Image (cartoon, rainbow, N blue to C red; front, side):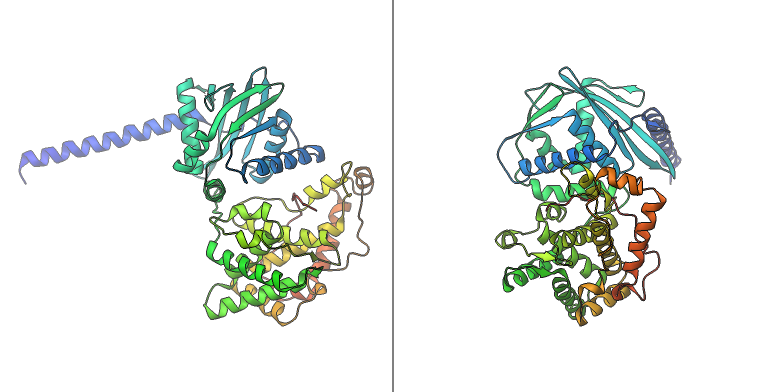
Length: 459
């Protein structure tokens, strides 16, 4: 190697080293400018019964308006609806908080997002003003922590953020679908044309967002599709009358056992796909959108099963919903399972707080926990269900459980969900569930049932 060649290599190495050093310094300076040690913006709305009702009603209305249409639609949202929804999102993703202030013809969005860097929790605090526009979204006066951004930079970074969160193609199609924005009278109005692959893209978007939160929400579509088809065939073969959830679980888990054995598959993964398919059949409008590219034509053409627990439809729904929400929580969605629906019911017009419902919630969680925790427990659950399964094997007595409690009655007797009296009632329920034959032996370590949290029921 000639001296000239050696000199060139040394020069190239110096350039590379200096470039890397400059890049590292630039990134460090940028992160210092845009990241803070504390969250600057908090939720202005608490998750009270009225706000929770407002948020869930808003999400349901928007979903019905957008997801099942390919036409241009107008979406309206009041500042109260937006802030109540942000409070609900904060319960799902505790690292996210913020609020929306509608002032004259502008809407000011303020958001704090927790970001772990090298084991340390930092926060991205951002604020931007949404303006009236006849040509899509238009942002102004944006800030990242203490750094002010130009309007051009604001709109560019927003587009890039959507592309990162939702994927470039899907993110661009969502942005392009927003035709106009009108802001007045404490409300926003968006004219939106949904992309043709809105439903398929939703599942992928949720999966990406969950990955960024530190976990991954991903279902094996082929396996979920198998069990969904199996359940549709089962429903069509049975008379259209009330049927115990135990009957469906027995047949479903027997099929999961068969699939596990003949194809040498993971028992826990088969149970997960089977239980989630049941949730899709019971409540397709809630759960189907988390599974990418799922075919639901046969499901839509089939009457839903009239499942019961203790002869009640509401308890069967609580059981199935909570099992599915536990699966979503295990796969990256930090759902709180149980009290939200009950908090709603203490409000005027609700059916009242019900510890019978909570019992069904906790039973569904316990069933899902053991069924998907590991292959040993999964195979045991499959075997027990396939052999013989009655409701009393997994669902305890609710004869003495307080029900129909108004907000005042609940507060008079239990104060709130953090009180000693409430926790004692929950402990009683948990002990009863633990004594059920299906849950008595060989339980995996670490499968403690969480205190119940928000779910939304459709009666």
